[in-house]
Amino acid sequence: MRHRSSLLLFVGVLIGLGVFGLRSTSALTLVPPSLEYKTAKGQTIDGVVKIINNENRTLVLTPSTANFGAKDETGDPDFKFDAPSADLASWIKIDTASVTLELGETKEIPFKIEVPANAEPGGHYAGIFFASGGSAAGGGQIGVQSKLGSLVILTVDGNIREQATISSVKLDGPTTVGRPPVDFSIRIKNGGNVHVKPKGKVTILNMFGGEVETMTLPQDKNVLPGQTRLFEVSWVKKATSAKKGGFFEEIGAEFSNFALGTYTANVEATYGETDKTMIGKVKFTIIPWRAITVVILGLLIVIFALTFGLKAYNRMVIRKAQGSMKPPVPPASKE
Image (cartoon, rainbow, N blue to C red):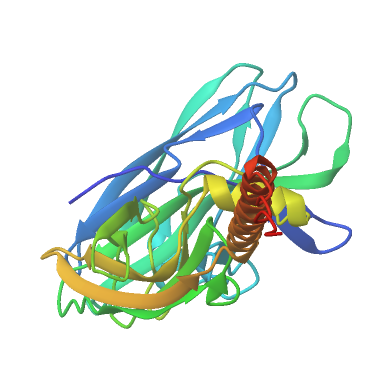
């Protein structure tokens, strides 16, 4: 059985509007921010979370659980607060119906995960939440209910399928650009039944196959079963504004980040218990046309200046030569 903490979520629920979003606060703390377990069917797991009240009032917290999945390609959790309790959310048992915390008080809240004997192998995902909706020391209800949550990530042994692929590697924009930075969008699809956490790199090769740069994929990003998750990587030669400026600003940026030709971005990543491999690539072209235009204009000016100067010099030499020549003496006449 494994236990690991990796993520902290604060969910603010606007009661009047019926919407929720993520927020953080230093007044109330729940640790660990996430719990990760691996166990067999029919087993019971004992766990504990700790709540610290740093607010200037007494709090009454109500525990609850909710399953979650991936909301979109960013991997943000999508909590099923309104769904009937099922799967991991229904396996988590918290004995207390409410928790009262005095100012500065810390309490440990035990819980159990009772895994059914017929549980599906693979990943199961839920959150343990504590909602604060008012004060026990007078003052009445407040307008915003806060839900502070700790994620529970559970893997049930059995027929575990780890199957991930790089579904696409694309540039964020046209495939022909004037200069770095070049932004890549890498999408990894999980076709298995357990979450994976890819590790890997993006290698930039020039048109001759030479290695130009190597970047690391963003770390510690889980891809849930059935999810396609976005990983973003940027190739930056020299720190400069990614926002395109005016013509003359871009001339300087192209010179300081000079690159020319066709490049290949190779993506290599591993995942799973046995470090399975997945690969992808994309080709792109960099043509710093502003810098090239300036260089060509500069060469033309130099060529014109040299040609004009050489002609002027030749004319001057000819004039000097003509001025130094004595006029021919006419032959004496015979009488």
